[in-house]
Amino acid sequence: MANDVYLGNPLLKKANTPIEFTQDQILEFVKCKQDPVYFAKNYVKIVTLDKGLQPFQLYPFQEKLVNNFHNHRFNICKMPRQTGKSTTVVSFLLHYAVFNDNVNIGILANKAATARELLDRLQTAYENLPKWMQQFASIFPLKWLTQGMRSVFLPDSFVKMEVAKSWEIGRTALVLVVWTLVGIGFSVKKFKWSNS
Image: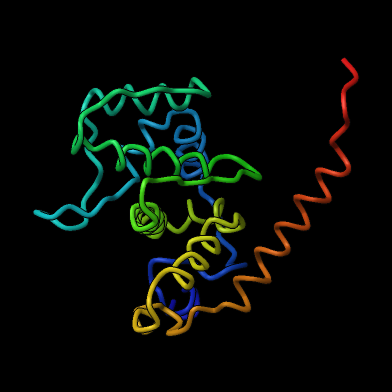
């Protein structure tokens, strides 16, 4: 079992670890893909100040937000501070990353520290998914992007908190370069200027 984990982190499955999916897991995966609220309620875990790591219990307005994000490309939300918007967005972004192929996710915030915090929340939520569900998302560059962001923005004293005890800059750069080349190749092959 210790050989099936990624860099000593028992929450992450090592790459290329074969997993046989049961019929129930396949049905659950399909159900989660179709319903981001169901996914958030059953699989997203968050860290709270009072109770630590716990399942994300959405309020009705948060369920409505997630459904709106899922069903409409553009959304404008006029909301007060401290209402769980960030956590709701993180749960939707995790759903988006896990259940969509070849997606890019950008997080913009008024401060770099806020964007880094959201990336860390996203990573925590991903790490706490069941390993069979991580199988579907492990090939996407989200993990490597957050790894690179931490290496750039966190001080060197934080490196000892990393699972590998290193920023893994070479591996991170290699994976992101490969994803960039794949994206460029796909764009060159598929993109055509329209004369209309």
